[in-house]
Length: 205
View 1: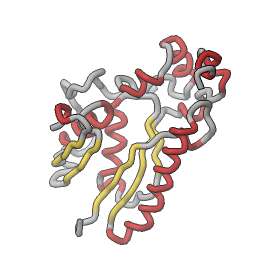
View 2: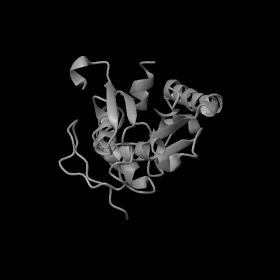
View 3: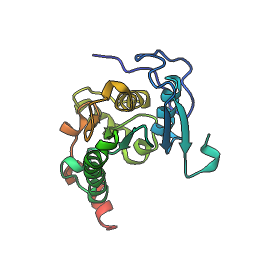
View 4: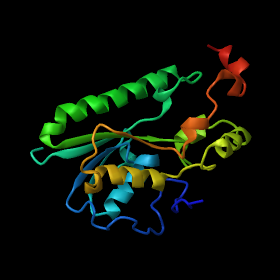
């Protein structure tokens, strides 16, 4: 089984980094990263900078921060719109809308040499999303081992996927949704029977 690249749990830079792509892959490029002050966005910003990119970070919290040439847009979405899932109609509908927007803008802005793609991460360790939505550790462990790669992903792996989509390596890729979840969306339980404490939760609805 392939080993994931090193990562750290919190919003800190990696103590060491091995370039899998050319170190100057994004030299002289400029990236505007929303949500770049924490979580997956923080790691994406770091990896882009490690590849020579001038990075602008946008965040809702100030303490967290730090056209005629075409461009690249990478939207962060999820696999929730690919199938039905209990208690996720709001998120699934929103992510399906982002995926549709990605395809429409790819068609509309392609003539201006602007590529638009989406990345759909799975359960990623060290993120607020996993802390909030992962459920009890025992339940999460059971789900993770049932997925094809049998582990969580990490923020560095997601940053590498975004790096690919933003780089010249993907120069002929637009309107695509790249799923980076270890195959989890294919096997994760999605019905009400798979939800712990569903009875008490539904009573609050």
